[in-house]
Length: 392
Image 1 (cartoon, rainbow, N blue to C red):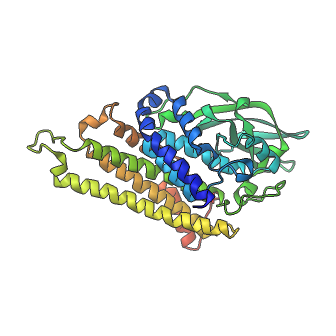
Image 2: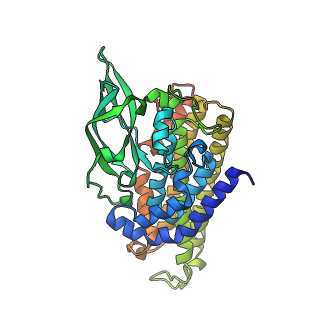
Image 3: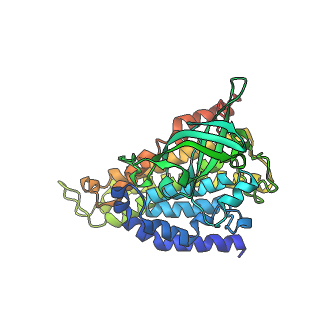
């Protein structure tokens, strides 16, 4: 067994062992609108927050497919914990797109939690040695437990044009609002973060284009060998992994709950004996299998490109986006089928399946994951048209 194989096996075993705890803590997480400390501590001890940290900084440097397996397993236990973990892990990968000096700071402890996103709602003003940054960033998942936060904004140039920049800033510099109160993904703590006149040194800032194409100056090692997958292809792949885990968790919960349940106002005393239930379970299972089958294809492609030191082509990136969104839709539909087959009692807060259903519904509304948008991008490229988006 290789060092990488043994690394992911240890993390997976540790995560599988805590799935019951993550699931048991789900209701408390939702009520407090943030993950319990126990969840975070257990994931940290399992090595989850070292997965995307480069090996040269003491991390595991796991390949994308292994990260996806672990994230799916976390989501099987708790959908919101899976989503937050995905944000922290994927942004650790994004941190490798910054300068060597910035990486030395971010990865100093070997295990790190990084939140953030790419909505350009900040403003950069040049100053000696770097920039003064102001702005606010909504829906900032995981910010309440992060060490660092990645934010985007605009720099106005002398000729009146604007440049998109991305900065990585210690979370301690931000003000975090208590404004996350939602009907779905409520445990993700996706609050608004704000910066006011904060200095960011130049080595912690990259151009948006450099982040997309892995061309940031100031790096001797642009990425660990075989670990650059294309920014948005990577993020979409990890999002899809979480949805597959959510769907797997929902199927498991349904199968645990359904035996011996009668169908009210009918003569059926065991729902498992009803042909409709059998069809519904098979339909959900096949949707999950189809989503995982699509996932296997783009994970293999992205790893082959990364191993060769190449960027995926524009067509491959567009296909990865379209297929990831389609897989997310399939996983969401699987949860919907199981929820609809669960009877009225499923709406009780004490039944975990309803939380998986609401989280899947809400998270699927994320702008980057919308099926229509991603299929449009994929379809345009397949038809020989320009993708009409820089987010590839």
